[in-house]
Amino acid sequence: MAPTEPIAALPPARRAGWRAYAGAAAAVGVVAAASAPLLGHLDLANIAMLFPPAVLFAAIRLGRGPAVLAAFLSVAVFDFFFVAPHFTLAVSDLQYVLTFVVLLAVALVTAELATGLRTQRDAAEDRERRAQALYRMAGELSASLTVEQIAEIAARYIREECGGRATLQLPDGEGPAAPPDRDHGAPPPTGKLIYLPLQAPMRNRGTIAVALDAGALTPSPEQHRLLETFATLTAIALERVHYIAVAQQAEVDMASERLRNSLLAALSHDLRTPLTALVGLADALALTGPRLAPEQAELAQAIREEALRTSALVHNLLDMARLQSGRVVLRREWQPLEEVVGTALRALARPLAAHRVRVALPAELPLVHIDAVMMERAFCNLLENAAKYTPHGSLIEISARERDAVIEIVVADDGPGLPPGRERELFEKFSRGRSESPIPGVGLGLAIVQAVVTAHGGRVRAGTREGGGAAFTLELPRGEPPALPDQIS
Image (cartoon, rainbow, N blue to C red):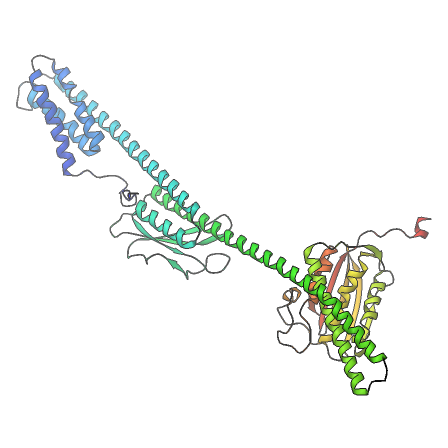
């Protein structure tokens, strides 16, 4: 593709040089020479009408200035060579003055009209050229796949169409364009700089700096709009490439998540049976005779406890995989909250034995529409976390209240509290409060709590307890519990 004449290098109005004026004079001379043999055969009025075409030619081909010169030269030449007395500008008959005036007026009007048409023609050609350039640029940008390709295309079209060099200045982070920290293309030369925002539909994608070549005139409004359109096309292409990358990354993440859940489910399922057998063997070892020595009995108990702990971790992995797969069907029933909390407390009686547990559930609390097994698992994880991460003798409190259209349940403790600024991160899978900690666990407890509560149409959040410590708040939809028999009667 051959480069076109730079639009920005052209002045708003073309100035005719001395060659154009010489050409206008030559055109009038040619008409005069061609009309000389007709003198005596045609009336002077008819001969006078041969000069406006010379003016028309000068206006179309050479410009307004040469056309005006041709108009005055036509009158002068006609008077000098064709009107008696010849070879002088004197006029013997005053009627020729009117002829000169009409000839001059016709020539000037012809020059003005032809010049206007020429200007409109040039403007139409410029618009067509800009439209073609925009069309080609849009086609190339639509096929680009990287930021580097977009930067090269934008710089090339601005150089070819506007006579300047462009530099894309893009921000690294999300959000509005920051001070440029990554440039594409060569540094702009010294000259007039034009900065244009790369404003895409979603947000600003950076800035494009255009340095006009030395000696270039300031772009006209049309040329500036062309640069703005180039910048808009570039911004849209950058946004398209950005969201293609985001979509590809999301697809990779989803595939990785599915693979990880499948592996976790398969691993957990295969580990449950040997762990259950290990617990049974440890119990059988303690019950079979002869009676074990104290050291051996302690060892058998340690094996049993470690097997139970590992089994609990496997159950968490399996529950997380099931919840993430979306194949879990909640068996929801209207339940009193104190029964579910009581079941969780009984299941964790041993870990909670070294702590003070206080339950404050109002008697007038309405029934909740929940899957009792899944919600019990959520309470068990919260209570187990409180037992593991607080010192012996700490207070663990379970409270609830009815607020607006939700039932708000709080599990709080007076321990060391949560890492500041990481309240939301704790609910992610395999995330722990301390990356290096002697406390056993894989960081799935709070993720399961969030998955269970979300499946019930609620939400969970972590915060700081008043007076110090951690507080986890579960919000469940209140719903409309069924009427009791005495209420029906």
